[in-house]
Length: 554
Image 1: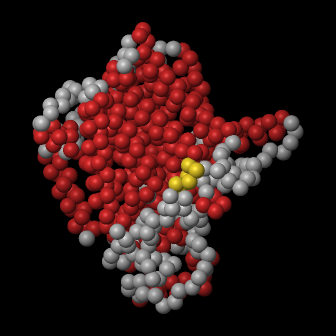
Image 2: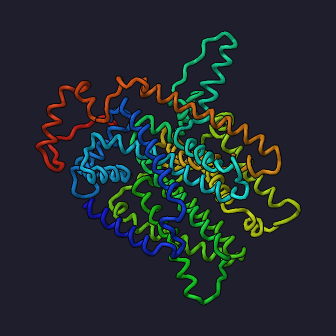
């Protein structure tokens, strides 16, 4: 089945390639071959790096690893989806197992084993977390700064892309800078012994320091890649980043064409608006998110809606009725397609959603500033810089004229930045009521929303810093950009700190343990190994002999 699906997809790609150029699709852009190869090499470098690190702590044990590994093993043994639940023998998996499904798909396609592909899949995603932001921000920088890219400046788009890739995939937040560098330095000046820094503290700050009942979570990709969980929000990183790039490609293709004039009664017009390949694919991706990570379904429906609205404002010459009509129809189209795509999953899924509640607790101001001050300041500064340039001299007073004057990369960066700021604000106002409501009401809401905000901020900062350095007309923007770049690069130190703390001395190959996620059983659970091997060899499917109660994730 996996081979058959792959063949169908390959044929589909061949058809697209044959008809490339129509409807704004350019499958293999001329003059870009070296860039394509270069990005593949970058992907492989980061894939190899993370795979090497994973070999120093390969075991699928602790936190949510057993659950993620178990999902994969359950699907490997099952001929239908969803597979039998690991803990509840009378039911099937009632969770977002899409990410593990894709891992199993690749496992079966390559004839591998889950013991190895569990780790390969998480390092696969980590590599995408660098190369996709790199590709997007590099292209945005080329589109915006092409007139300024002379001489040595020609390398700036690549540098901006690298900064964006590093910001998304290996950076920490300012918590690392403040609590591992600045505060210990001040303690040393006072003759005190500096506190040691434990890298998970950057993800457990609000509610923990100081200790208050409002416990929250604010993780980010680097922490996930080091920790090694293959959970829903982690695997979906590569898909949401692809969607963001797809949306930029659509906005860019629209701006490159003349403004569309809507003629009432023209069926051809509506057919064209409803068959935009970028939006159709975006709708399919958003529907898939209900299967891979439901939170991203909501988040990126809003992000997609923002891009569609901003693009239509420019595309239809600021004519309000036309903008609202087309945007509303396209929104309905996205909702319908996404729901149809997700039906095989949602028809068998029992949601834990219990409604939306008003937040009773709020984060302390200094905590928000430490976690989000840097990206918010740089994002707001970028927006001010762009708007000030376009309003200078009294020009572009209307909203349409202003947006028309703003370049596509600038407009897209504004959309990403505003969406990211919104994702930070929402958990301070409301939260989704779920199984964590008693004691950790805001935890899951803040976790899932700010995780996406972190990635959107990373790409916005990567683009915004270099855009202001090269194109800003006021020195204040350039100065603050340099300061922001220094602080952003300082957060990259989180990568080294966390890798050493979790994987150990990675520069000593003798400590390398390999990629087998189940090899730890030989030492830690020696009395169970023979039984596990016998069951895997002799038992087919997922029959149940005995079910016992136990702790979560065990």
